[in-house]
Image: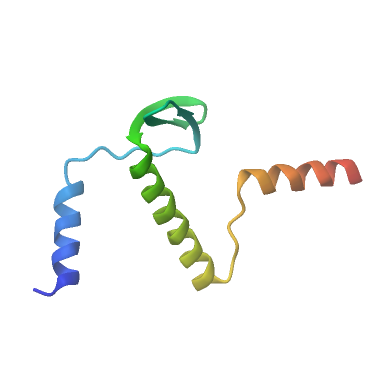
Length: 95
């Protein structure tokens, strides 16, 4: 078994009994030692994550790299809420 097959097997075993939570909104709260992330689906709270700053930084870097890789491979930029809202407001003011 090569490393890739081993990693895939470990991943399959790890997610086997893990709940699958879809979210399309989030909120972030901070205190002196932790970061809280509230995940929501259509305005309904689904889960509250509580993590250290170091873990959140690593997560943020990893997620950004995943998105950057996707955009580079597909040649398409994924919009985010700030750009969508700004674009909508600009279109509304032009009409």
